[in-house]
Length: 551
Image: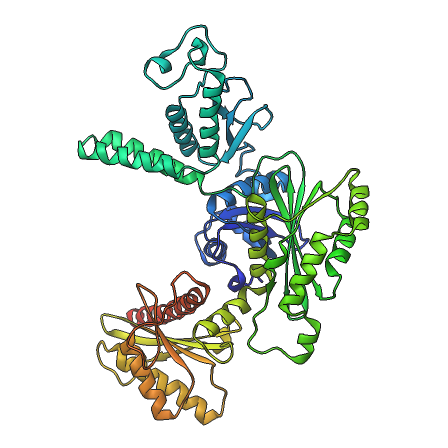
């Protein structure tokens, strides 16, 4: 059974496997959780998709930095694995590049296969954005696009869009200077050019020449697209492995990204107990059974990811190095990589293996992406619980959270839901639903007071444990109603409310919301809980309405 609660909301690729652990489908998504969930929640699936779902036994995923990277990664993975249910759905084309040739007076154009000499930029998954970028770069820097330089200037020269090196009117140095500027823009350093285009767009808009302004706006969008860096596909001629790790609770969690000629083709993850020489031992064991690449990319010494736990047992403290000790370990290891280890890896590879510790750039970004995948693969549930506890300044992480929501239709069939999340995941065995008994009409405040009182008076009577945090869907009014009932019962469990629209978090005693940004981990977790409570309440309300219609 697929546990949808562990699927991240990030962009990336999802990989379905059957009971034989064979890959049967690979897809991409802007939001992995929504996309994967749709396979198991929709009822109107086409016959082929129904057959696919029937054979899905497990799901894996690779998180990417953005949707563009997910598209490129999907294309690569499908070509590598050729999954059964992708065969008729995907063509085998490669995404195109923008190409600057290696001539004395280079031409700029589009190239499908990365085989020609010169510089390549991309790949681009959107032909429209690629063409917009190519057009604006050609016009801005007046670069030639002809395949063979003619003996006399063409139309592009006469309308001012080409320097026409074919005429001999531009020096090689000046032309190469323009090529250098184009190269900078195509690598993503496009803000100055974008700013210039914005001013042009405003001028044309003031003149009410809206069609021209719209074209320039599209060019600006295309340049902004360039800054959406594509870390899963880079132009290099050798293979790399990107290895990052996290030390937590006396264990090592490692992620290996396999990058073939600049393209990410897969990942592997490992965990084992911490010991001092774990990295060298891991590298030896891993490359004894795997092909050794030309380059191994490792993280920087000062950027170790270590747990900032609320409480850690003495045993764990002894097993896990202190932050300074871990940094010292990394520093000593990475600066003085064992000569024998390099010799071993080089012997396996057949020539010298390079070990790189990047400070910035694409390789650094790949390390960060690997770290993000470690967090999601191993800690997606517990990390959000800990993040919430810290932002609410609770003495311990709120392992058990109960959330209440009210649902009605124009004041009729008013119901309430209570969902429980345990260790970051829905605990559906402890979901509860309530028919409102004492409130007439629309009164969310009184309805919240009723269900909170009913829930926790029952726990008191049955001598059952209370949650670590109580959450109310609503603003200060709903929160005040809940707090009033809890005081009557003598319940001292922390309680908060989450208001819709701005996702503001309110706590008793403060008139203003606490400063939690709605896109940070703690807030996203609260939103996940609230949305589940809302879904559960609406489902119950709909059931009551349908029953009323049939009675």
